[in-house]
Image 1 (tube, rainbow, N blue to C red):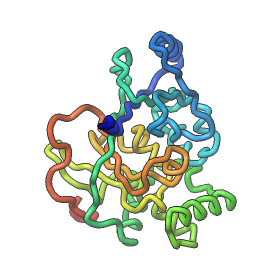
Image 2 (image 1 turned 30 degrees about the horizontal axis):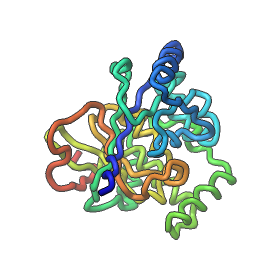
Image 3 (image 1 turned 120 degrees about the vertical axis):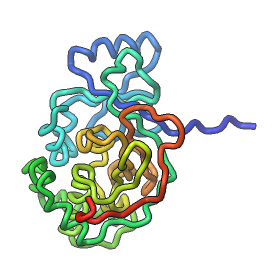
Length: 256
């Protein structure tokens, strides 16, 4: 009988530049190759990649506009490490434990939900100006990716509304489920309509939540081979027992 496939799990850490040399020594002593991410930030999420390093400059490459959230955050200048195994030497730098779930939301966001989310004062205060500065070439790319994942949307402005509202939901949640540890915000739409899930998975957005349910964006399905619409749980610390309890609840802004 063949060996069962190991469950998907990634550990994400934020390191200072001065700590990278120690990481390189540790992985070399282990006989493990430390991969260097190039072009996009999500390739380290690929199950085949054991451990990868994302330099600050990568956030200025293919996903430069979404990378503006990183540059505007307290993570700016830090190196991201994504590993399939724990790094005990960097326990204090652990930012996320990422696992695959069977979560299915009872409902996704309506247009009114999205409009309410992008009007939220906390979102407006945090959203970098560059996030809204989308060039025509980039618009065509996102529409093409959405179509590749089965979407019929042809208006980029509708796509951008969803992408922005999704980030806003991890800042001031309107759509979330509940657990014993509190509310857990989740991605408000299908993978085809999302963007830059790395921001939530790596705690650039929504770090105040101990848990988040994040659907892969098109880039993560293409470059990291993650399954579309399969929610990932990003936890700031290990949890014992069942992580998700109770039924998924959809909440309007008035109920928050």
